[in-house]
Image (tube, rainbow, N blue to C red; front, side, top):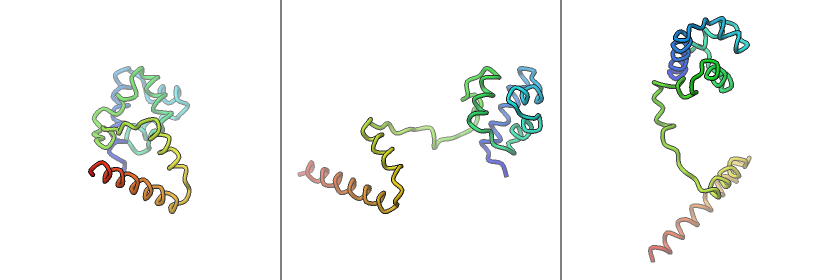
Length: 122
């Protein structure tokens, strides 16, 4: 079963394509795809890759966000702002291959931050 966001993106592609009086064949040729692939995108049967989303937005002369209109994605709505040091730390953490190493880092940070909170309360 297609993901609801894929269906919404496909619907938006279809609407924008129709508004611009572009056929599935024309859009497919512009993207190096068959019209059948465009049909699958528009039905939400196949997911559209990030690069194809970008190409579609450029071809249809819209911001890429327009392709997601109507997709309620609250999990992406609020981003946590990180300091440059915190961001660098997060990147290093993600590069760790060892689950035990990741746990150790979390434990150390928890102990340090808990210790600081206790010192500040005293």
